[in-house]
Length: 404
Ligand code: HEM
Image (cartoon, rainbow, N blue to C red):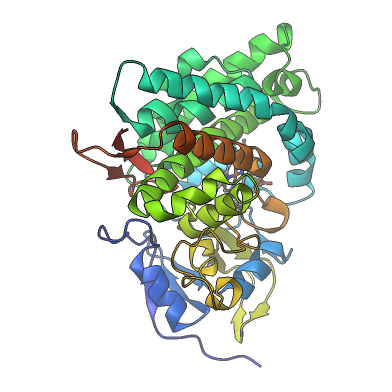
């Protein structure tokens, strides 16, 4: 049975409400309240389907009839003018199996839970040293610049074999690539510069390999130099931007709700608390784009072959049936006692986040250590105050002045 979709069309990407910086854009919650599948208007004038319901999002992300390959003409573009840059050198994030699996397999070993568990002492040391520097002779800091960004940047640099001294360059280029307002020319220039940087690094590592991911990729004969650079770019950006934003947003949110901070001090509750922060904040808030390869009936709506769809994990993660409970705060609020394990903040299906064990370890160590070492941590009224990164595809913070 099929039904006619709702007449409402929702604009993508939609802005956040500045008064509710930790909630998804109001247009998305409105869409979710309208129907689990609605229509969305894209900035290039095209339209696509918008899946907001938990079950529908889960199906789209795990059903092979939906493709993540941006080369399909109907693939929804959240920013106009990006298709060229995306198509020139697609990373495995934007490829389907078997090519996706072939390239992903080359780096899965580096992010396995067992491997990441062995990294915990090293991550703890990086976190401790960042806090030592942040607090040394000072009583105020910008938590983003002094803690949230340096910790995951240094971790991914060490893993990849990228010199940390080059962080200003790659962090700046990442910001351009993730900025919704960057022009097509700016995106192309940033992408070319990052490619040249990582490609050059990989070429040197091919001659003199080290014990790092980029070296291991560079010496392979079954990857072209372009594929090595593309995977390097994906890991470098995904590895620092996401986790940095989760650390700063989680801190800002907890400073607003200090009664919940104590949960982080209980080692048994810490992993669950981090899952709830991931669910509630769902920083990939504008969703995951896909295109249907054949006609698929979903929630009473037929998505035709060639039509685009955006799987909105931010609304799916607020599903009351899935995440609500009698003794809990509503699913659109933070409740560190909630069992949030079925959230999709890391996606779902074959493209599910490769770095999630690493992100979890970094978040658990960074947040627990921050609040243990600085029990008096609170917002500081310096500079321009706390600033959110609503211009970015991955939601986060630009600055978070704190004192202790
Ligand atoms: C809190 C932090 C993070 C969040 C919320 C996050 C979120 C996501 C999401 C939603 C996807 C799925 C995209 C899709 O299906 O279209 C994804 C994929 C991916 N993430 Fe993460 N991520 C995080 C941290 C990391 C880290 C630390 C790395 C390490 C390098 C990483 C590497 C990747 C890669 C390589 C993919 C592509 C996987 C594939 O296509 O098979 N992520 N991430």
